Length: 517
Ligand code: XMP
Image 1 (cartoon, helix red, strand yellow):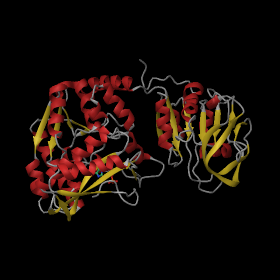
Image 2: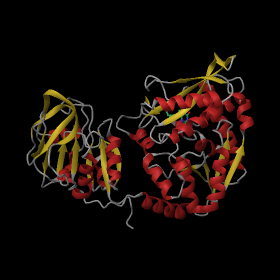
Image 3: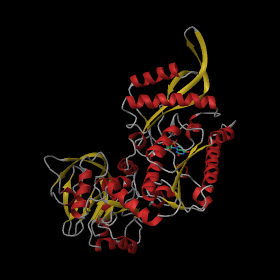
Image 4: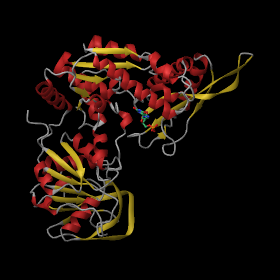
């Protein structure tokens, strides 16, 4: 097998909201790609040796002073170039064409009439105009020399252009978004057809290559990994286990704020089924003692984070000399720190075991650094992880502690665990568990009056939080069927003692957040 990174596409980012989607579509075509800022120096671009370059969209106007640009040298590399929206305009601008503010902004759906089935359009079966998604105010007034218009829409006489000989193309619409149904095939046609990449970026190949690489690099050295039971850390642990076996020690900390049955499920699967060298640390009492009387959300997070590091470090010390810490950082976290948007975009440290590597002077191993979440899940499936882990919804590090408003007590944890289990069960039964982003219960710190039988009750309120999202940066409450809500409400009130009311959270993010604390 040739090196899976050898044939790669370089995506230069001009700050579009959808740049990551371009990368995902290219990966779906089984071609490796990376996103770098448009300011990447030419010598680095040349050294990177891409088989093709895609220029993303962006919010700027290319004729304004200070507008982001790209080194013209990319056109001399002899590799195909595709500009999307702003990317097309910057190509035009740099190669001597004219971009100007259009008479009308074009935003939303449009019908694309393709005149030449070439380049990205080579595989289009054109019976009728293609639905595409537009989002631009500027348009091409004059094509650069050597270019011709390949497609039009009602508002854009040059909705796509190409210098067919040099294989430089531009599209005014966004092929990467779902609203352009044929867009993925266009991007695939560009990277496979024009750039000549072979479709070898499969998660089977990735797993094999990563395991081989680890065997060579890490063989005989000690690696530790914090296993949380989430998909990312599970995939990291399994990849390393397959490479170095018992030289990997996975540590699973029971922090007392996990969901019902989680400890036994994770221990059973990874130790008994996969044969991992797994240490399960029961630190529930320590965490819960420290959380006593604490109601401030940030304080809860801080206590849990610090206590985790303390417990993990103590456990790691018992292993003697350890060189490496494996962590499940994913590609979106990596891009955020290098993106064109600049250094202000910080990595969400809470998503990983923040602080551990520095404190323990360990070298990081991050086998998922190149992967999107979907790809990580695919690797999990390749490695035989059960669907219950692979398609697990995200669960925050501070666990149920930030879903119990007010003080975290054992009694309230018990109540929330029971309610949470019912939510998970019913979401799965309705076949919605994997369709929504997250679905969970929250303990509200108020009691309300109810009536059960002939008795007046004065008990707790549970809130339901069910959201749709693509990346947790924004979210909206899921429009789940009333029947499901009715079932959740009646089951929780009937089966969970101490609860007499269920409410539904109908807030979007922003301005709310997904979690309540
Ligand atoms: P928010 O509440 O900020 O959550 O809208 C966005 C996503 O991040 C998860 N989340 C966390 N994950 N540690 C984590 O590992 C945390 O402290 C934490 N806080 C929120 C949340 O579940 C959602 O998916």
